[in-house]
Length: 471
Image (cartoon, rainbow, N blue to C red; front, side, top):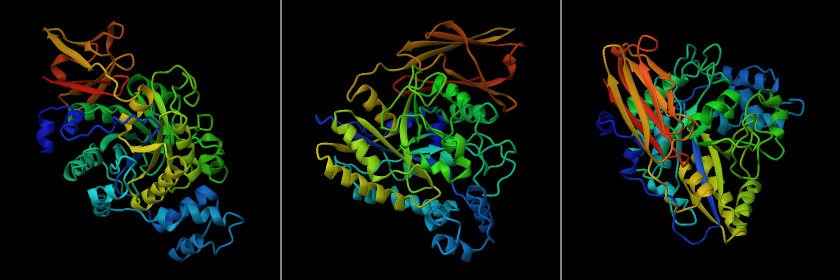
């Protein structure tokens, strides 16, 4: 069924609308916490015992002989580590080192947690079951892959699309996660730049042209944003769930990769569960940019973890009449059930403290819309008119807004050549915020080399639109 839908060039969001239920509800009680569980969806991950002890040395400066016995001693705090025993025990706990290292293990987990039985066993205040937001990454362009990550365009994306359909998970949604490329193209290393990530535009172009899909909610890989990433998102993606700011940010003191704001730097961002528009020059500060950034904390990992105090803060904010997005994140390569249940207990306890506040599970873009614009708002549909003119010298593509408005300065233009290259290009501006054009000729891409094009955009409410043309 999935291939049929893709072959028909249907908008991906439309496919899910076949069986999507609106997570926003019509109750008069506006004291709401919208709980958004966004999963960094990366597929299986393997780590040898040698690699585990390499991380121990890299993160904490501790050198030990790699062995399962020594790992168990670290977990049980039975080795003198100069005051780092507690911290090392947490970072290298059995839970954090017990990976889903195959698709078979991931599927076994998904069969359990995506079932109606599990979802409905942990209902929200309205009696609805758990919702997952699957932020899928594409591992492509790597030359070194010691953790045996699943490589290839759409590999993880397609797997989860199929699982959502298979399990009839009508409220789940697929969103975007991206890992900036490491300089040595190592799949287990972290980059911090979109500019140096040569695979960035191919990933998006292929999603547009081959899957008729464009993201509206972003999760930063390694929690990393920088000016180039910030300005890229400002052009096309209205909703960003990457702010992991905490009150103390003490986690950076003990882990080398988190010091001086190297990775996951959100020290100056709001930590009160508010959604904010970033500043042009600093994504962590409030300003006048277009997109909205929400706060999200980790489930049982080595830093920026959700806690009862943080959940209570979200409920307290909602109790003041401020609809609140409470985001949590984790990875599919760990046992997510063991991370969800303790968080659910926090939600129940906060509900007892704030009985007038409802917590409602939500798809991410719905949560942003409800918090920013309010529930049950009417939004004009988004539509573009796409035409082209062709003669012996060139092919001219014309795009104009027919209804609604485009988020950012231009739609995203994706091009596939007959040789199989995927290219992103800028439009020429005709009328600001209204119309654009692109000319294929000897100065750009020759008309006879164009196989297909895709035009994608969002509006400020996070509704996506994709149109494609095959030549």
